[in-house]
Amino acid sequence: SLPGSALTANARANVRAGDVLVAVGAADDDALRDLARRAPAWGLAVVWIGAGAPPPSGSADALLWFDDEMAAHDGRFMLVYHLLWELAHVCLEHGGVLRSPADCDGPVCVTCADEGRLAEVLAVDGVTARVRAADGEEDVDLALVGVASVHDLLVVHAGTAIARFGGAP
Image 1 (spheres, rainbow, N blue to C red):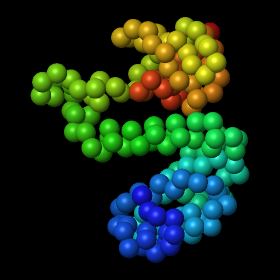
Image 2: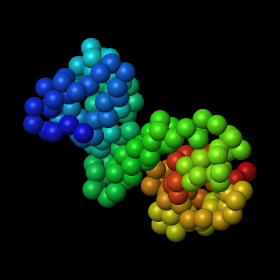
Image 3: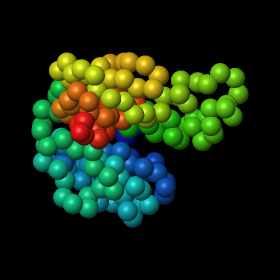
Image 4: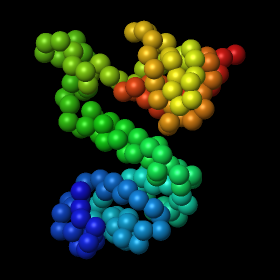
């Protein structure tokens, strides 16, 4: 996390080649546009999360973007940010995900057990759905996939639907 004042100077002093710059903000933010423009010269990958009009094509290696500016105020924006944060920690900081659960010492931890899994929608109630997965039923948040229907297949991670495969035949 870098302070907003003198953002480019702070980034220049703190980043190393191979780092990932996660820019969180609007495409018209001059400081973020400047960082994204300089990132290739510094050897950084850029993930830009925002809402509203997207930045120009090629501004980032990956965009997690909502066209609807309300996403910055209704929780969808922060849900994407927190999901990315959690997945980064699972992938980069927890050695258990690189081994099978049988190889873990002791009981399987929550991180190892909480991988993306397939689930079928049983009922939809606004922005949540009741789903059935191999290990039972649970309620999941639909903010990342939008509208879902009964019998849709979803990939679920950490109580959140992260992808939809479509409806029943």
